Amino acid sequence: MAENISSVTDTSFQSEVIEASNALPVMVDFWADWCRPCHMLAPTVAEIAQDYAGKLKVVKLNVDENVNSAGRYNIRGIPTLLIFKGGQVADQIVGAVPKDQISKIVDRHVN
Image (cartoon, rainbow, N blue to C red; front, side, top):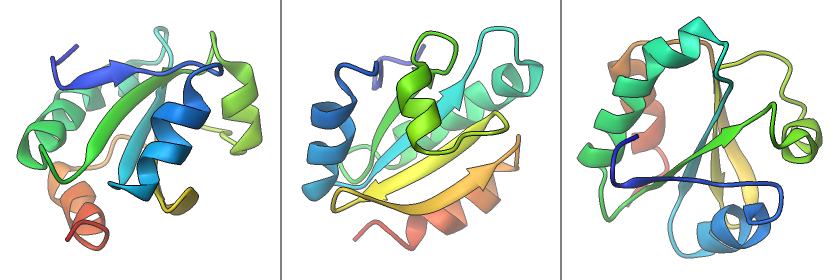
């Protein structure tokens, strides 16, 4: 995992994502170890974290280990990227989509 991407859990979700998104948009990568598209998307997520360092916080959440957060945000398919801003879900990206598509959506939420 890239050094500027941390893992969050059901326990740390409130402080690491919800509260943190009041200061900076937070992109959460919902993934699982068995999910091939998740592994394909991982390098792209790492690049996004690098490109938007200081403007966007990027975290990963393993849906198998943290079912409460995945359930609360109605995650049905993975990979799913949720962008939180001001404590709310501001955008959602489902599937292993190209980097430029993710960047376009992230650009709407960073200053």
